[in-house]
Amino acid sequence: MKSAVRKTRVIFWSFAVTASFIQAWSYRFYIEPDGVNYLDVAAAYRRADWNAAINGYWSPLYSWLLALVQTFFHPSAFWESTFLHLLNFAVFLLTLRCFEFFFSQLLRLLRAESPDATDDEMTPEWAWWVLGYSAFLLSALRLITLSTDTPDMVLAAWLFLASGLLIQTGRFQNGILRHAMFGAVLGFAYLTKSVMFPLSFVYIFASSVSHRGWKKPDLRGLVALAAFAVVSLPFVTVISLSKGYVTFGETGKIAYFDEVNAPSMEGKLIHPMHELFERPNIYEYAVPFTSTFPPWYDPSYWYAGATLRLDLRAQLRAIGRAAVNYFHILSTEKEWIAGWLVLAIFAGNWREQAKRLFGWWFLWLPSLAMLVLYALVLVEPRYIGVPLTVIRLMLFAALPWPQIMVARRLGMAVFLAIGITTGITIIRATIPELAACIRPASHAQWTVAQQLEQRNLAAGDRVAVLGHTKVGDYWAHLAGLRIVADIPTEEVPA
Image (cartoon, rainbow, N blue to C red; front, side, top):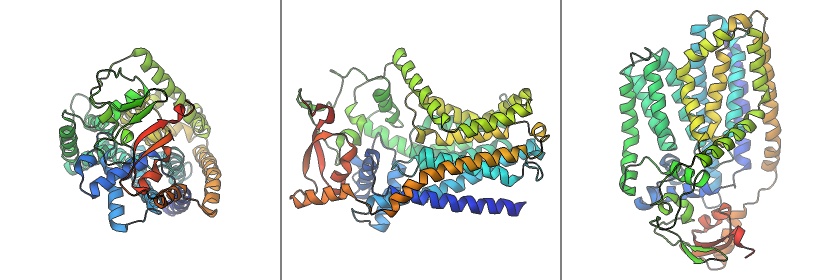
């Protein structure tokens, strides 16, 4: 059956590479505000402008990767966004390999507790890989996607790798080197997105306790903690010195201000924006940042002096919004819910299912913690692709397979049905992306930048924007301009 598994991998790799490249190429000229700022940070690192590069909001690793791409390939302004999306495509391939590592460890855990779960006559291993690859493609191409210019795909690679190492350290290979690798991976995950700083402690706790139980934690978890510290603390130190207080990043605080509970600003802010007029609202913000749009380059600079305060009503509203978002995301994947329910109801042994599920708590706890943490502030599909995938596959693996195998090939049939419906969903989304690849593409942002240069605007010039939404800042980045004042879109009628 190993040949069947190899064929399954070849088919899914071919499909994944094709679909992901089409998605990346169809969005090659599309850049959101996040991408503009990561490119600005990368440019600051390249010119050794450390004051601008050490940023309290944007985590550094994605900008480092962009800086390396720009250093080695020297893309022109026209092709800069294309190289960014090609970087995302390369990271996608790496993420797929990291997922394969995680899923192979999950199957290893399954075989250790249910040797017949991958029986060649009932539910062969290749059918499990169909289920796994389908879950990955759904997460990578529909939730995270290659259309964005954010580090979420990079983080996905680290998270799948960490989840695989978590299974190894928790059940199989518990050596010091493996723990060190585990901690280092979590450190790089933090450098990718700051939310991983608190979550890394959940991963390390789960790894340390799962092997010997709650009463005898594995002290080799301290090796993972030390490796995490070696990777993460240099940047924590630098960012703390930059801000003047101990911090691992300001992203969570700013997101809480923006999405949950904005603080009272009057008389508190150290660096308030200069309001030129009250109606219409016109703001000026020519500050020390050498960036395209200073208010979004490092929001923590503008919020300096504001303090967090808990408003229970606002927090409950945020949790309610998160619950609605989770429902909408999960409701688009009905085939997965239906497939799991068919197998779970057929097996009927709910006590055994619950026992195995709680026995694997170390695997689902970090993913659940991530879902809960995002639910307190903001839930977007690209944030939760990996934890949903880990929990989804673990729920299938935790089913009582001896009872399911009473019905010959029921598991294989369900897995194939899920794989086929997921594949159709991805193909349906890929068709318009393929059409966008075939049509001649218009690089509107670059065209605007060229026209501004023809009007005698040069790199370094300051400009103001009427009807500003932040989405169009890429033209200013390409032209090397600095937006130092604007009238927001909602104020244009005034």
